[in-house]
Length: 112
Image (cartoon, rainbow, N blue to C red; front, side, top):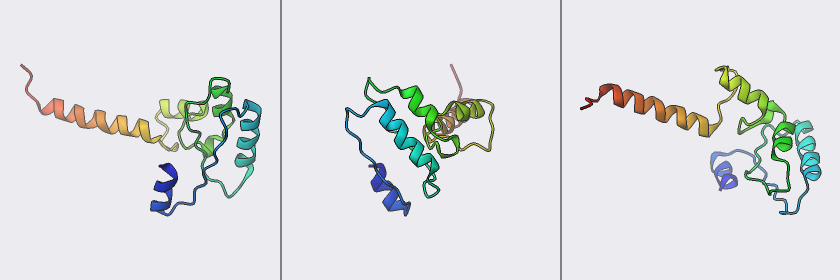
């Protein structure tokens, strides 16, 4: 679905599918390779990962500048401090937009 949306938007995207038995060290090596590839501008890891993979190590290994989901601890910290230089992950942005709409709606409502 994400690969299809990339194509629709004219974004060069590559889907790298790994087997369910991929080890943490194998995924870390792939992320290191993508981090150093200047043609790669964003990395998105599909969660949840299999139970035997260390999710925290994987997310921490992604270069914060290439962290599409904003789940690297650096980006979470910057987001918490409302640092506008950090792209807001789409899920967080959707929640913010929803809350803005609901707050506005509640302010205009009469509560009984």
